[in-house]
Length: 267
Image (cartoon, rainbow, N blue to C red; front, side, top):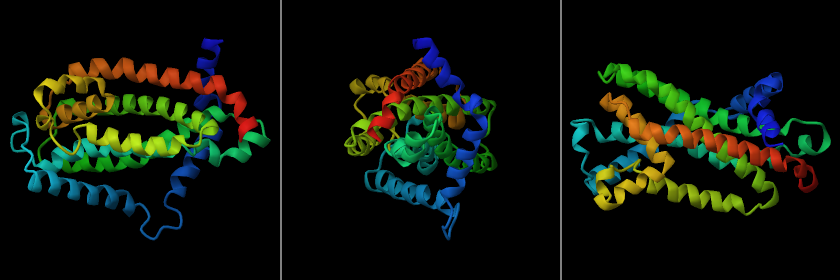
């Protein structure tokens, strides 16, 4: 039973490719439909937030840059953590309403509901992946390019799998417990500030820094910074990212598939 459910989860986007593709296209274009600025808002929101955080931590709190990053501007250091987080946070924020929005389909027709977490995760990652790619192009013009950049898509892919596993669990639980929406919002806010994204890890007391390895998003952020800004391979973070991402993806999918038959009774 376990492996049968897991197989259905893993191959859902392939078996139902046409439907999956249509939903992705619909959700992607729907984000900008009726908006005067269109995709411009994709860049305005993170840029404004980055400017605010950069001013607060680099000017007001005068947060010191880690020595290994040399003369790297604080705003570039911060963006390498903030942009990947934006994709993660956006997908997680949408998770609580994914199935609720598709309730008419789930309850009235034979619908492969297992494709919904994938759609709800891939669209934010496509949107914010564009922003990250454009920022990398800018960094290339500033002389930051190195061969380690070729590892970035792999790290981004593992982050996607990690996120999709969590989205699957949250979207399924929210069908039965609607209060999870508020819990997710509070958790994301806490998780964001507990991850050295808008501040350097040097602000955390040395005795507490090893505990950050238990924070998957810290390992992702650290990987992007080491690969892109330092040209180093983040071996320690990578050894954590791979098993955690694969386990979360498979476990989240199994939980989703295990309780999906009860969705119609509640929705």
